[in-house]
Length: 299
Ligand SMILES: Cc1cc2nc3c(=O)[nH]c(=O)nc-3n(C[C@H](O)[C@H](O)[C@H](O)COP(=O)(O)OP(=O)(O)OC[C@H]3O[C@@H](n4cnc5c(N)ncnc54)[C@H](O)[C@@H]3O)c2cc1C
Image (cartoon, rainbow, N blue to C red; front, side, top):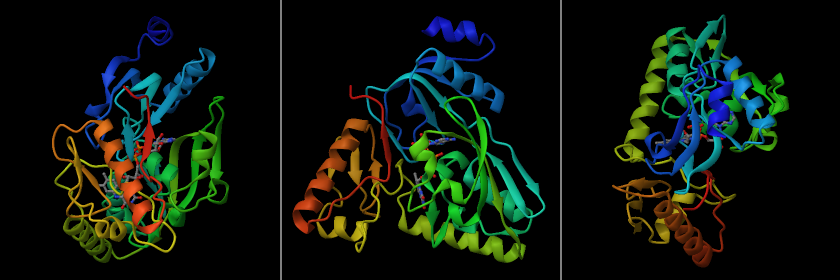
C-alpha cells in the first residue's frame, strides 16, 4: 500500500507511521499509517479519489483541537489540512480555506473592519473543524455567520452547500453525517467599528484565559452540555476535579476540561472520560456524551 501511494503521487511527501501526538492538542495519540498535508484542493481531491480506488480508509483532521486519537493510531491514509490556509476578504464576506486557523480568520475579519466573528477569537480549531463541529462560544456559533461551505464528497465531487443544507445544530453539521471534506467556508459579516471588534475579542480572550486551563495541553470541553444541566457543575459536584489517570487529569480550573499534566496517553484520557461518565451517571442519573471526537484503534 505504501509503495502505491508513493507511485501515484511521487511529488507528494508521505509520512509513514507518523506519531499523531506531534499534532494533537492533547499531545497524545498513536501513529498514522500514512500521513499527508495536502497543499491544494486538487491534491486533496486526488488523494481522496486514490483512497476510494484502493479501498484505503481515509481520515480528515484539521487542527486536532477537538480530537482524541487512540494509542493504536489510524489505519490507512490521514490528511491534515492545515497547509490549505488561504483567507480572502471580498466586500463583507471572508472566504477561508479549510486549514486556515479560526483564530487567524477572526484577525483578518477585524483588520477588514468586519463584525460577527468575534465570538470565535479564541477557538483553536481550523475552519474545516469549526464547520464540522458548528463551533461556538459566548452566545455565538459558526451557523450564525456562515453563508456557505465548499465540500468534497468521498466520490470526488465538489459541491457548494448553503447554510440551510449544512443542517446545523448544537455541535452538529451535515458534514458529520455525509463524511464530506470541508474545503472552504464563506462567512457573511457586517461592517463594524474596528475598535469595538478588537475590544470584544480581547475581552473574550481574557475571559477564556481566566476560566480555562490554557497553560496545559487539552482538547477543550470534553463533554456536550446535557439538556437542563451544566457539565462543569455536575463534574465539580461529583468531586471529580483533580481525578487523574496517568498523565490525564480533570482540570481544577475548569471541570469540563481534561488536561495533560505530563506524559498522558490517549488510554489515560479514555479512562478518565469513562470514570467521569460513570460517576456522573451514578450520582445524578445524567448521561454525559462526548463532544470531543474519538478516532483510531486501541493499542
Ligand atoms: C483550549 C481549547 C478551547 C476550545 N474552546 C472551544 C470553544 O469555545 N467552542 C468550541 O466549539 N470548541 C472549542 N474547542 C474545541 C475545538 O477547537 C473546536 O471543536 C474546533 O472547531 C475543532 O476544529 P479542529 O480543526 O481542531 O478539528 P479537529 O480536532 O482536527 O477535528 C474535529 C472533527 O472535525 C473533523 N474535521 C476537521 N477538519 C475537517 C474538514 N476539513 N472536513 C471534514 N471534517 C473535518 C475531523 O474529522 C474530526 O471529526 C476548544 C479546544 C481547545 C483545545
